[in-house]
Structures are given as C-alpha cells and as structure tokens.
Length: 276
Image 1: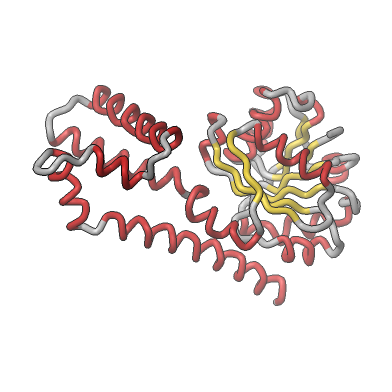
Image 2 (image 1 turned 180 degrees about the horizontal axis):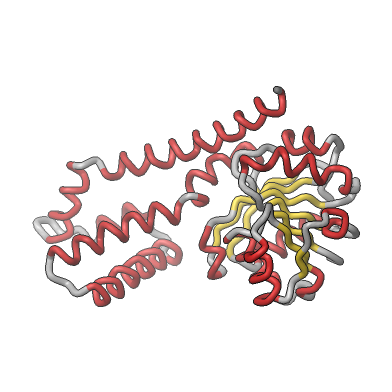
C-alpha cells in the first residue's frame, strides 16, 4: 500500500486509521483523510495521528491504491459521483456503507472497479470488531489480502458472500448496541436491588466477558451452558422464567430481523435514487 485515502472522518474511520497506524501497516503520512465540511475534526485527526488531510479531491486521490468510503450512506451517491473521475481501474475501493451494494457503487462510479464491502462494528475502536467482508470478481488475491490485513488491525475478520452482509449488519454490525441496551437494563436493576453503581458495572462487565469467553472456548452450545447453571428451583431459573414470560428471546430475534430488513431497505432506497 502506497497511499490510503479515507472519505469520511467519523468514529469508524478514526478507529480504522488508528488500527492501521498502531499496527504500523503504513506510515501515517501515507494516509489521507477528508470529510464533508468538519475542518475541526480533520485538524484533530492530523494532530493526533499524523495523517494528511485535504478537501482537494485530486490531491486526496492522486496515486491512492486504496480508497475507503466511510461517509454516511445517504451521502454515498453524491460522494462517489464526485470522485469517479479520479479513480483508476486498479484502485481498490473499500465501502463501509451499510446497505449500499457493489452493483450500486459500480453504477455510480461508471466503470468496473475492484470493490470490497466491509461491515465492522463500533468495537473496532478498541480493536475488538467483528468485521465481515465481501468482494466483487475484479478484486485480485493481493487486494483481498490487503483488505484482510487492514481490518485485522481492528479485530476478527471473515469473508462472506455479499447477500449475507445485510444479515451481518443486523447481527454483529448493530450488535454492540443490543448488548449496551442489555447492560443498561442490568445497571437499572442493580440500583433497585441495592448495589452501588461502580461495583455493579464491574460485576456486569466481567459477567459478560466471562460468559462470552465460555461460549468462545467451550465445545458446548449456549443452550447447554445455560442449562448447566439453571438448577431446578434456584435463582437462575426464577430469573429466566421472567425473561421467558416477557418473550425476551423472541424480541431479540425480531430486533435482529428488523435491523437486517432496514439494511436491505437502505440499499433499495439508494438504487431508487440512482434510477431517478
């Protein structure tokens, strides 16, 4: 990688450039960043990470071997149209845009181009993302390896087929928010049962880390692990009974399905915009 250009300077873009720099994939001055209009944010990134920033698209994209699209999905069409004349046939385009298909990107770019769609999550900020990647047929093996190397800097990386990305978005892309929502509920309950805030937070966090570790390292299924800690007539059984009465498991399933459908709707909306 000679030069990486990142379009968009939000939290995901910052997490990614932070991981790249921390793992020393390339020198900070080989990373160029721009955004729509937030000059203060660009200055902060330049000061903190030593990257280059500019609003001049020609300078941004000149000799860039990798271009990362990290703007909001609603701004994708306008942004891609702005940069299309600066893209070469061998420029690797990495899209972080939820719901925006590779076919849509190719139409907007008005040329066949190597494209990889990436769906990380916000845990990339601490190097613990679960990132799914999908590539088009033009992406070379070398470019595929480059993309994996980039996203390995912020966590676990897997390749999937593009149609699976909507499901990945609903499951792991939005997943951290579901866990935060659960933690909020556990914290509220801690107050009600008389546990002090900081103490409760430590217990909750370690409980989640421990449970995730058990699922990760054990050969047993989550259902088996749950059953093993649920003694008849015990406290765990009493608590789980309430969750079942409120159909919490069913609510989580519906939650993930709806997030997946929203990802599909976002993509369909962009396709309609292109058609119009």
